[in-house]
Image (tube, rainbow, N blue to C red; front, side, top):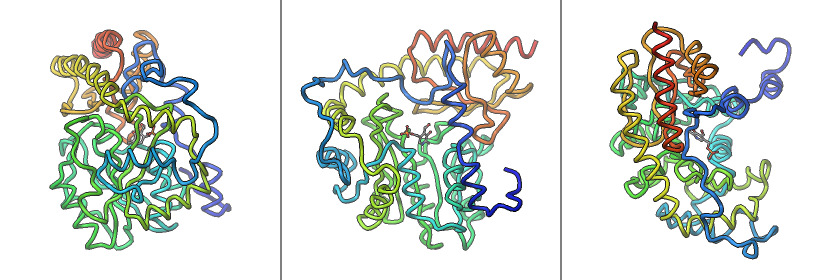
Length: 372
Ligand SMILES: Cc1ncc(COP(=O)(O)O)c(C=O)c1O
């Protein structure tokens, strides 16, 4: 970002607000063989027992639709007063940041990072510092590194679990150690768990159960293919949760009632949604593993769970690979520059298995051509 010049910093940030990654994802990421998507492919409404007669346009959404909040609370092992309804994890993160941070305060964010997190923090005039969880560390969060980078101005530590872009998982012991560092520094920890949902029945309890300093965000988007209903949530202590609900009045006001009704049906039939997502991932993960195994021009930590991986291209430019793969091989990946690591690219395995298999073949051909 260039210098604000004569404008006030806030006016500059408002006039330059936005997310380069989101613009890329919405406008330029589509491809016939799409390995760029980070979630499981869309779940069709026809697979859910929803009848038009069951839907209604208007209803009691106010501070969240009661039956939806109750289901989310039960699923996450908390009481409904700890659940804030939001439009996706995107708005959940925004509301949580706005409630937890004042302009000029500092957030300590993992690196590589999902760019929307830092664009949102900067939009809120929060200063961003980073701690490293790169390839050399196996994409692990090292509490000592967090301790080294935290400052007296840090009020929030931000991590994704599973990590976007690498898919690496943070275990409870590490989260507890990060939580202890936060407590000592009068800070909190935000854990974006949107990809943790893709562990399905093996999913650990949300990090809010590790202590009052934890705030969790998530949604039905990535693991279940239900992005269109925008069912997101924040888990926080009741007092913080209320503050976030009141801030939401300034942004989204209410949820969309028909979407909330469909979300309730989806949660009541989550077994079938999960069965389909698991089938897709179980078909595609061996294809990803075989691909990574076969490439000596890539360095990668193979994720055990989730929907994405983040290999490093050892020689050549990712920009050239992206262009070649897209233009000649009709295959899309996400250039690593969107996560702050220009020599990497992100690949997703939540798509149709046949499309994914061909996509990896074509990506391999593009890599072969690049090095020839
Ligand atoms: C880490 C992370 N959080 C949040 C989101 C946005 O999720 P949602 O669609 O629920 O707003 C994404 C989407 O890519 C993501 O990668």
